[in-house]
Length: 72
Image 1 (cartoon, one colour):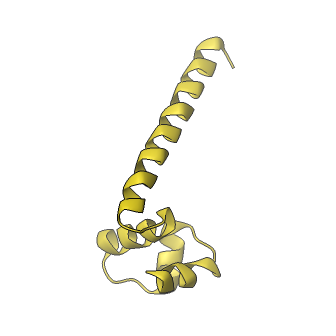
Image 2 (cartoon, rainbow, N blue to C red):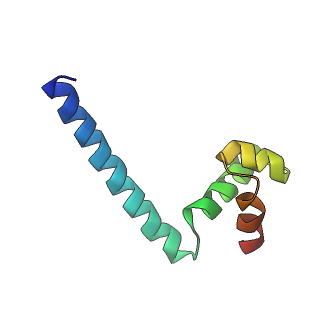
Image 3 (cartoon, one colour):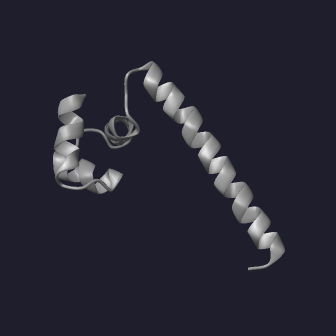
């Protein structure tokens, strides 16, 4: 990679981390985890979904999606 590409990559990485930290603050205000928010966002965006469809949409694993849903 060139120096310019390195600089851009570092900047994007820092921005992603900043966005992630800010989002986590907002999730905590509502007692949510990022995974729970992902489930809610999937349902809001796509409407009624079954557990398997939610799993595919949020790229979750078969074991963790039911736990996330139960914790909501």
